[in-house]
Every structure is written in structure tokens, then in C-alpha cells.
Image: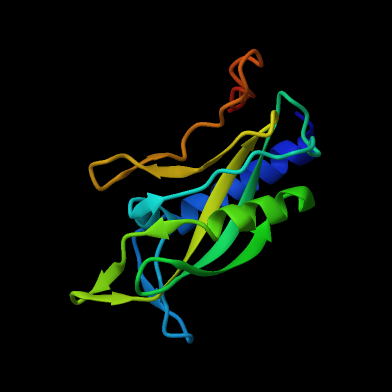
Length: 165
């Protein structure tokens, strides 16, 4: 994997970790800002599009697309804005996220509109999956593995040099 792709992936994963915190904010648009992992646990239905043509990544690498998602009081995606990722991932990522359905998010027992983020992980062979998925128990799974397509090995490994005194 080239340094530029690896560096972009590390930055994206770090941003996801920050976005996955447990705080909730109110925005100027009256939508409540909810962390990605919290909303991922509420996913009822999600689409994962395959890419029809090769991307800037090769078969044994991967890419991440990040999308800002606006969810209405009923849990339907009411809007999406592409935040980052390769240009050729933009339309498939937006089309997929617009089909997602969440359990309504409640504040004081009442459903509210939400602003959140979604990260879609694209494998080099074109297959995609959300970074976080509901695990069936009200929590999420994912977010800590960078998978590669079959036959590509275990993926990149970070080797650190021993610190010098």
C-alpha cells in the first residue's frame, strides 16, 4: 500500500475514533449530533453497493468513504453529504447511505432529527461494508479491523523501532 493511501487511511480511522465518542450535541438546524457508533447500533437496514469499475486502489488494498448523514424523526435518511474519500467512491457511497434506515433516535422519549456520520469501507475488489454494524444486542461490531480481499494476506502491519534512551 502506498504511503499516501496508508496515511489517508490512518487519518480517516483517527477521525472516526473521535466521531465515535459518546457525546451528543445540538446543531443550529435543530438536529441532534449523534456519534457514528451510537447510530450504527440503531441501523435497521443498510445498502452496500459494489463498484462497477476498478478504483484508485488495487485489488489488495482498500479505501474509506466518509459521509455526513441527516436522519429524520422517523429514522429515514433525509440527506447526505460526502466528506472524504476517493472521488469515484462519492456517488456509490451517497447512493447507499440514502437507502439506510435507522430506529428513531429518542431524546426525553421523543423522536428527533439527527446529524451523524457513516463510514463505508471499500475493499480493493469493489465489495463494501459499513465500518460499524449492529451486533443484535444494541451495540456495534467493527471499526477495529482493516480487512483485505481473500488471497491478499493479513494486510499492512505497523513496525515500530525500539525507543532509544
